[in-house]
Length: 294
Image 1 (cartoon, rainbow, N blue to C red):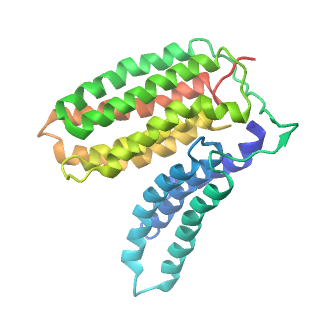
Image 2 (image 1 turned 135 degrees about the vertical axis):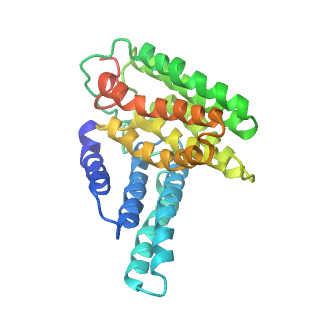
């Protein structure tokens, strides 16, 4: 699987690098549109809900493409057509996936058995679960406490996020003791976390208030980072990409509450702290993908 996904994963990383290194002003929205939208190609390793995963990334990409439409509508149709072409592809992905890869990338079978993927190789997996649980203790527990003070949907979403992270820790522990399963079995293996990721997005999607929309957006974008468990061979760069989308919303919270209500500032620091701690953790224990027993 590592070699199978490598060409696309490497190009996704390079696309993000182009946007990250850009220092101009004229085309920042174009580059953001593509660097956010390219995450949709990660559907090939998302189970059991690849189509909803793509829908989530479309929203992040359209935030930037809408700025292009606003700037160029009635002035330069070249940019308008650029947006239509890119957005058209992203939106067409969803029905395509629903029709051909409903619960995940469809694999050919031999003798009624799905061909198993090769396990990624990582030098050391010792203590991987414990190290991940330490991140929960350091960042997620305070995050939930701050969320409880804010209350409402923020608190409810935070509890779902902690549950997803705890299940991720359990998943890491199980993987370290078992051989990598077939693609069919992988679906059931990832289901508990995938389902919670969906519920977290639903909390944000159903919210009709104004006070905490940025909090809910921060988490619904940030939870995509937990998808690293099915990304090979570059899970750490994948997480770094999702951090930018989440920070866009958390920066709005800092702007609104800094010097006024430190609970919200601490909330951001705890959540962002967890996301930023993930890449070095992954590099240490799961360099090219979730580590399985040999």
